[in-house]
Amino acid sequence: MMFHVDFKSGKPVYLQLVDQVRYAAASGALRPGDALPSIRPLAEELRVNRNTVAKAYAELESLGVIETMAGKGCFLKENDSPLTKQVRHKLLAAKIDEAVVTAHQMQVSPEVLRGLLEERIQFFERKKAAAQPEPQEKEQIWTPTNPSLTSPISTDVLDGWTPSTD
Amino acid sequence: MQAGRCYGFFGRNGAGKTTTIKCLLNLLRPTAGSLRVFGIDPQKDEVAVKSRLAYVPDVVAFYPWMTVRDTLNYQASFRQHWNETVAADLQRRFELDPAQKTANLSKGQKTQLALIGAIAAEPELLVLDEPTSGLDPIVRREFIETVIGAYQSGDPEHRTVFVSTHLIAEFEGLIDEFTIIAQGRNLLTMEADQARNRFCKIRARFAEAPPELKLPGAINVRQTGRELELIGNGNARELLETLRGHRPEDLRCEALSLEEIFVASKALPQESIL
Image (tube, rainbow over the protein chains, first blue to last red):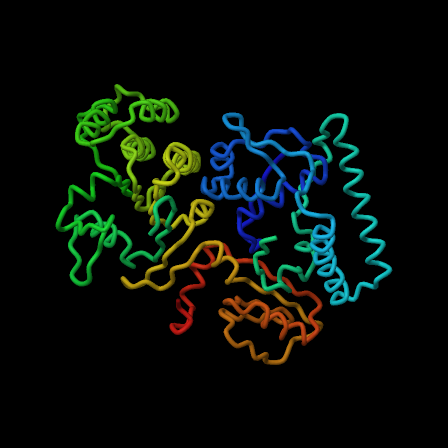
C-alpha cells in the first residue's frame, strides 16, 4: 500500500497513517498476513520523524489491526476486535451519529443519506472483491481518509479539529 | 527540550537563530540571561557539552589540503565515540571519493561530509544551522533522509535534533515542536500537530459582497469582491459559525503548514502569544 501525508488536513500525522492502514484493510488493499513497511524506510520515504511512524504502528497494534512479530516486522491481523458486540455497536453508532448530524447541516435528506450509506458499503465491497484474486493497482486512486474533506464544509471543521482518540 | 524529539527553530534573517546556536556551542557568550545544554553551562564546561553533540553549520570549512578520508579520520580522532560502519555506509551512499581533497568538493559534498562527521559520532544532540540552504533538491532530500534514517533510527530514544532553517516545508514531517523567534525573543513555541490544528485558513464565497463582518481573533482578513479569506487562531469553530450565518455559497477551511504559520506569526497580536 502507498502512504501519503497531508499537513493541511489538520489531523495529526500519526493518525493519518493509522487511518490509511485501516482504510486499506477495509478496502482490501491490505489483506491479513500482509507485511507493512518497516519503520525506518517508511519514515525516510515520507520524510517524517521516525517516532511518528512508530507511534502510528503502536496505535494500530493497540487497536488490534496489526501485530508485530519479533525480528520479522508488522503484519495485518485477521479482523477480530477484542471488544464485545455491544461496545462495538455503541462506538459505531457514535460515528453514524456524526454523519447524521452532518447530513442535517448540509440539508441532505434522510432518504438520500440512506442511499449514500448503501452506496459506500457497496463501494468498499467492490474494492475488496477486486483486490481478492490479485491486487489490482490500476484502480487504486488515492481516496482521502476522511471523505468529508473534499466537501465544502468538512466535518473535521465542525468538530473544531479535536483529534479523535478512538 | 526532551530527548528523542526533533525541534525546529524558526525566525527571519537577523532574528538571532545563529547567535543562539553559537551561544549553545560557546562560540559566543550571551550578554544577558543564561543557557544550559544537557543541564550544563557551556561557558563553564564546554568540552562536556560538545562531546555529547554534533553541529552542522550552513557554511562548512575543512582544511583544504586534507582528503575526505583524512578529514573523517581527523574528526574521529577527537571524538570519544565513532561508528566507522555508519561513516563508511554514508560515504558510499553520497558517492564521496575518499581520496578527494576537500578543496575540490562542491558545497553539497562539503555538507555531506560534515553530516557524515556529525552522524558517525552518534551524538545525543544534532544541531543543524540552516544545513540545506543553497543545496540542490536531491542533496537536500538525502540530507533529511539521512537524519531520519542513519541518525534518528540508530537509537531513537536518545537522538535529539535541533534544526534552524528557512526551508521549513522540507523539515515539516520531522519536526515535533518548534519555536519562532523575533528580535532575539521567543514569539511562539508549540507542538507541530497542535499548531496545525490551531491555525487554519478559512475561505468563504458569498452570493454578493458581504457587509463588514465582525470576526474577532481572525488574522490577515482579506476581502476580494464576494470572497473572504482569513486565518483562524484557535477559534475556527466560532469564525465558521459566524460566516455560516451569512449563508456563504462556499466555505472551506484547511490547516496551515508550519511555513504558513511562520509567515502568519508576524501578524499575531502580542497578547495571543503563548
